[in-house]
Image (cartoon, rainbow, N blue to C red):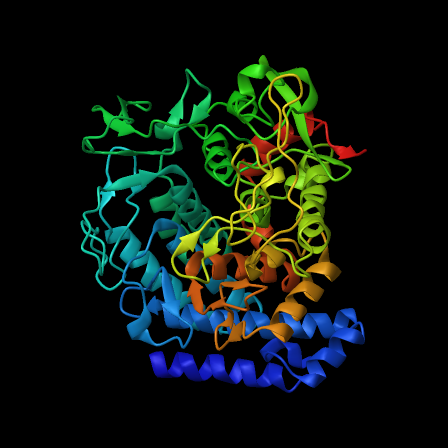
Length: 519
């Protein structure tokens, strides 16, 4: 079966290769440089996007363990099975589910192959160990066997089994998408998803969700014992809540609201920015804004200034915090006066930083592999609520802005170091700055050894030229979802958004006007 699948995928790629595709898809060359200068047409761009989709899908074919249908978390740049990481998560599984549907809908694999792959994965998911009272899944499993991990592969470090709200949110998203995209599997996918109770993460006293919980005492100081959903026994919640609104955990909030597990008032319970008082002067800078009330909840409609714009920030300033959720939920359409204004400004902020403020010549900053080794959070410091923020270069060059009337700042940096861009960030921006995103990706492929057999490698340090030549299931999954929307008529949104999600969440988005715009 593996050989057959590989031959099918290879044939699809070969068919695409017969079209006129700019050479930048496969790396540096004189013809690639010429294609960049020639301002390729939208038709050329579309053919190039299809090639990128085919190659990215090849990485998933290599990531997945055929017997279980579970994708590994990461794999080496040569796609050899021996270079897999040896662990997987609910997010990775969700990403493989929706990527398989994208591969089908873009003609990379047949309906029959897609159905077989999805069925194998679902059969394994049904048998994974869960936290039965909540229906949630643990954070780490062995992709070869499906066993819950109690120690980390390689290091042997102990794993304290944890149940993450955001990771379960992405698995539930994948299950919902499969139930709509493949009717033959709808009953099985829905049976798993409908047992998942996101109300178990919801702290009514704070009107926010927790990061997750342990079902046995982790013997740490921060966790808080409790039971938010009538599980019958306490679990140990993370000491923190997800308090920032414009971050990826909102997918769990949306799903919980849609299922009636979390009240609609929760939509207004997180911070657009923190209030503009000195109590919050540890954050990035003093916001502008005003107070409003929705469903009896007071909301500070705040925004942070950045290079002539006012933007509702993320927590750290990264692209995936802001733009992974709208791959599946049409936020800018449901909330035209809120998300519809903020998403394009946020992308513009990332472009401004990479191309002008830091003068890297490239942009797209988001958590990724570190080209120097390991994994790191990258972002645009000033686009994040957190005072420290995520930084865009290896030197961690931050911006210490003043908080007017409360604390002084420091002079702005006069130069930045070895900036790190990750291709998935540009794919997330396709909807909001299509031409600039494609051009940025062309430059990355042209100027660095950043493109391999499974598509774009995970990250590039643009001044040293160092490349992290690995593929991550999460990042490849975001790329596949973005390309599925671009090439298959918003397929990801068409499968996920209609029904309970739209009925419950769209009216909430429509109520609000963000205090964002250009100065």
